[in-house]
Length: 356
Ligand code: NAD
Ligand code: IPM
Ligand code: MN
Image (tube, rainbow, N blue to C red; front, side, top):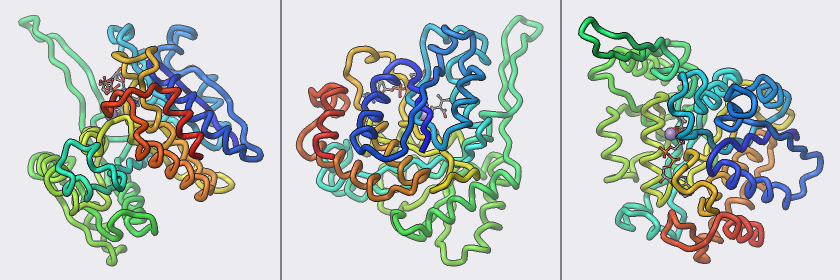
């Protein structure tokens, strides 16, 4: 069980440290961790946000635990040298095309959500986000017009094979035992305007023919943003593209209570001895506004480590133990500033380990 630990920038190292301590507490035989630099910190040390050495470490492991990247000091760099290219590069290089982002309001913790408790209590969904295509990875550029004004562009596209493989993941997820609202899958697109989305929708419909047991629906993304907040009870699995999935998952995290609570798993087809190779990270970023102050909530990263045990190492029991410890800590009133509490990053980590 080899894990590459890539803490990155801002609050990345703070939250990753707590997740590592949780893994160490479990004392699993044969678990070894290897550290690597990514993001702005890697650019500053090695001249590149994703050094070859880091990529080699990641490839040689069974799973990657990732913190966050992003540094305001680097926002003026040429795009290929910016910290965010590290996570985009890892996803692409490791072919991690399927991003699973569960969003669930913890039982008894409906009051953490800004939604009315009776609506919040219904929120239990799995966002399946395509992760290596879309407008993120299309041709992009900038030019200066004759009048001296600038124009920028990013090409959005999806091919049938790209949509087909993520759709298969979503159908399988909708059928899995632990899936929220089993057999219910909603594909989210913008097919009323975008050709990319028309190909997306037609391909998902085609894939549905081999999954007749799954109740498939389609929804435009603007409506989906509205429905997630007003009527979350209708959603089980949401299947969507890279850009829409990025936006809808931040939205879902706010409905749960905080972005500091949502984990993610990014997987592809490579298998490990006990599961699939994957990269596990909180859905939030490097939070430069609170970095270095010990204020970050590490729960999203700790829950990402639980997803790692489940998907890459076949350790369902330990994954559930971690999830239970986090929800107990929350139920006992352990809250970071993101949830209106006073507990710091290390205190939250310690509280979770104590309950573990
Ligand atoms: P962000 O997610 O970093 O922060 C948004 C807000 O949420 C901030 O107010 C922040 O303080 C708060 N927040 C985030 N995580 C928190 C936590 N664990 N505990 C408490 N509060 C938390 O998004 P942003 O501000 O738009 O982006 C900051 C940087 O992070 C940018 O450089 C961006 O590109 C990068 N980013 C990286 C990733 C990633 O590494 N996967 C994800 C998103 C953003
Ligand atoms: C995320 C982040 C990334 C994304 C950025 C940092 C490239 O927002 O993981 O949600 O857009 O995928
Ligand atoms: Mn995001």
